[in-house]
Image (cartoon, rainbow, N blue to C red; front, side, top):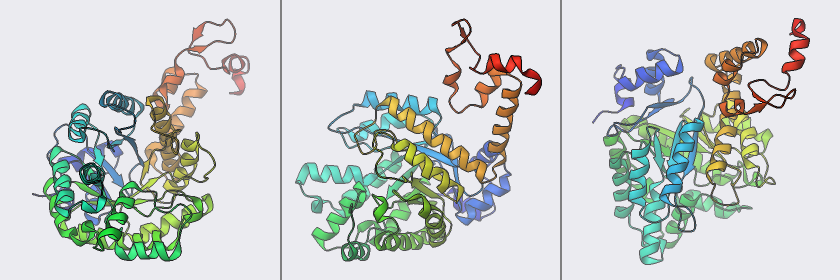
Length: 423
């Protein structure tokens, strides 16, 4: 079955390309060219009818992802479905189901059915959890079980999957020879590293990458090549293990494009602010300018409870220098699973970062949105201000300082009336 990149390379413009072109305010041919080059992906499983396609990559707006998922310790399907509603209302572009609790298959299908947003998963989470549940030993996970779960999730309609193909024996050797402050902080990366060390075998996602490509091509599922060795603190940013894995991911990006499979690359993590520009540039060059999906980056390690802010600071700079996709970070990062309120706060912080990056990148729609907001402020047009605001709820229940009654005026309204000729 054909894929977006196969069609693009053949000179054809698909319905999905037309849709995202109109949404982004660019030409259909521009979208086709970028998809053909592998510098843009369109997230949509060809088996999923209820999915609204989303473009991620060069020349379009920076997108954001919100993570949800059940766990054995806390959270239920109902709580996660409530988070889906919050994600849609708050305006995230994409969500990921990272469930590790009970009935993972049921949870995934319910989430897919509940939203039109593109959905991602990490199949290793399910395969690894079920192997641990059954055998109490990650080394007992078979290649066939892992690939069976991958195909099952793709068949269910998942639009992109994180696969830690770059956690190879060589990369693990680099990690061990150098050492780290925080070791491996990626759950999928840690599972595979333990499996490699226990079995002495190569990572099956790398060794059998062609088989993985066959599955992804069948469903037009985008491979999100996971950064299993991403830095878990600023001190580990840009170390030998991270760079070694990135080089492997660059090789895999080229193989995916040649095979007609869409691919993007995942990046750090925790990165000091001054290192972000050069790191983003290096990752982009090493991975053939594939779309880059970053977690944060978080620019400091000492802000538990406020990591949505540290991530927004890093995400803005990363987006400005070429990152295409921001994974949100909530105030609960490093503390526990986020509730619906924290999910909302994380999305809003990430949306601000993405928009600020879009303005810095010269995105015409983002620049015009800021301009229209400024005009609305000048005209005291509260309806228009609400229309252009990232968080429209702030225009509700605003209290007039003069008489205490609910109104739609901001605190500066009285001053602006008095000095109107100067505004």
